Image 1 (cartoon, helix red, strand yellow):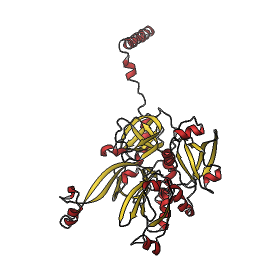
Image 2 (cartoon, helix red, strand yellow):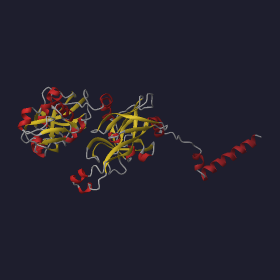
Image 3 (cartoon, rainbow, N blue to C red):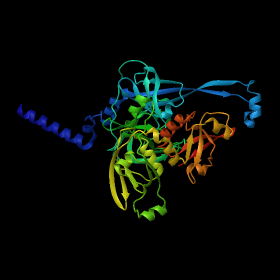
Image 4 (spheres, rainbow, N blue to C red):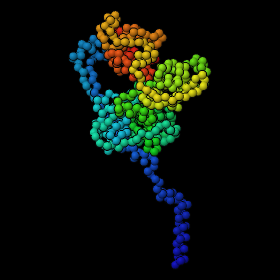
Length: 462
């Protein structure tokens, strides 16, 4: 009996080794590798908080067969025969719930001009939503589901420790295909790109997964399922690459969007200009980029921190500053009470200062306008209206223009009336001050200037 067992054991061993020798995949095929890897776990964790956003825009248009002739006479004559007709235009995007009350973070261009917003959750439940706040400069918006309740949400992570080459996961609704998951790696950080709308965007995360229009506003995750960015389809030439807004940039403005519906941008109190080859040679700077401080307002955060004219700013919070445009885009993401660390050169020596961004004092608005745009303005008095032949007191009148300033170069003259700054209508000096405060951290300003009975749109690049 014992001998029989020994024989059986030997035969079994021989069969096992023969199988291993002639069929080496037999044993490995029976081993089950874990299918719930890190990517699957991250997607399972976040998917309930990812939403499809469907917007509806009402467009009013007059069907005029003579419109193509470009003749205003025909357009005016036939307007009663060809009344305006409204039609609806729909678009799709994505978003991610960041608060259990149903607050959703997405791209501004996903919901811009929308008259109706609907969101669909991963369980196919559909809800009406309303716009809470948006910011076109950073292309971010917050919308809220229009019902009370608690919703699955994701906490915002961090993006200041991202690594080139680390695995990332994008979730969205490309071409209306709900909850599509793609993976890739971070290809580059701090990218500056020019979007399809002509705007310049900075500090973008570049990844090797393409971001299509339906993906816009969806979450970018790291391998642990942490929210590190908001995917953004703004670069039409992108093929096989995508871009995302770092979540640290979004975190700085989300509270303002929820509380105020807009961003209360912080003010540092300085004006800067690009470093020309002549200036680089004059100051003996060997590092690339940087901006020259051309004006420091007394009592401002920058002044109190020790920054002065002729200092050369090279970085903000360790992000390199390569141009004036780069500088203004960088500070546009900081709100009131945000802390910044600025590195700069003075007399060839590198220095650093810490400061806290503040709200622009209204009493400085007129001084900022003069230093920044190059003109002074005041209310339109009866005497001024008579002197310059004006038939309205709406707007503000230009009382002085600084030689060689941005306003002077574009052709603004004394007696011109400012009727609009960017998207803000100017009725009086109070409107003018507020618009200057809102616009002062930008690289350009759109003005509607009235001269006599004619109005002109001009863009100033101070």
